[in-house]
Image (tube, rainbow, N blue to C red; front, top):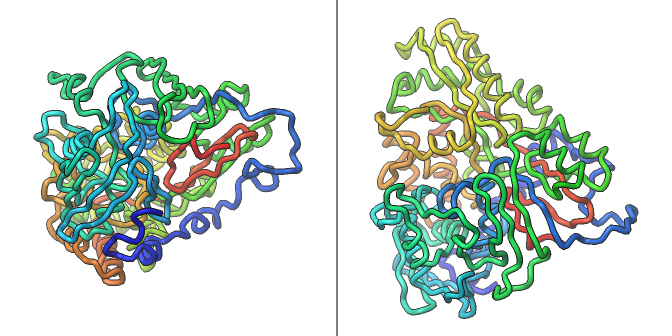
Length: 542
């Protein structure tokens, strides 16, 4: 691949330290291959069928975007839709690194910058040519809140990126404050390009958002353009005739969503949907027994956990946060609520991620110890609320309710679950640690460490400088992460990240839960292998 031999860190070593083998361990060993003899990869020669590959596909998600801005939420369902319209600048393969896409070549300059060379044949859906100014502006609006057209996702995913500028019409200089290899994983995963003039024109200053409600309001460079849009319900795409790359496999694509797994499964059974995400364990058999569809699953890079914002009581006490971890029986949740489709975890990242610490065990439920720690914290008798989403993660609402019941068993803490739409949780995660802005200090969320490096799993949550959306305020933990970002020696940096995970375990900024399995239902004519990073790219199907 172009650019592969031009980084200052050898790419083969990067592959080694990012842990390419995560997809076959952990949960699969626990849950087994859910399809057994019935599940296939879509090319079973023994299953003869006269059905042809479809010209149209309907994808049913668990939540639906309500914005035209692809950088409004850092949410998998949103990216599953918008990557087909706006498309990433690089192709990222979990465990392998980044590859050319809209970007043809890239080269670190040795001075804290990398020069990125764009293709010369890329146009937006409105007919304007993609330029380096567009890419630089898009990166800058993500990392600089004073740009005037702010990106609500803040620095999540681009933690070490400091800015970008156009060198010429097709060359972008990206500056960063970390080792070049770490920066490459960041901009390689999260760099997108908006048309600068379009974004400014569609910016609603009153709501501080890029807004629009019609199909023609969208404007990306991706293989599909929007032809119909009903905010919060459905979006219909068609092939973009002037797309620079290979023709995508489907003529028409419809994305819709349902927060209920049973509804997603029903749509699959009746042929109303060709692909559904987040099939619940209890619905797997239903899909397997249906005609013309099947289950495909993969161990994800996503950990599920519950942040506790430590700038408000009672979560400002480490003893209280630890007590919440000892109150919850993760193994019981995995076995009963998830039917084994998960693995208890005691640190921010999953196995196979660079810096995962194999010596850290999950917290084990110990009611007596939890009650004692609550008393030590001085917060005995507290009433707390756990905010959990409905339909975003495997059995998320049921997990939230079970967790709340477990905590409520403590003699000196009362806890109730508040089940909400995922948007509420996402907003809580971005709200930062300003006590005046915190509405939900204790909530459930999932995070997929798609870069393969612990930094992505911790920096957005824990680093303090220039990070208004952090969820935890602790200088020791923040400093440890920032120091690890500057280490270029791979073994030394891996050890530093293991220590970061150990520190996070002890400080308990989260109630650590589990690593999640990704379970999909799909039209069995379509050949497609799910990705560990949970991304759905239609152009990978055939």
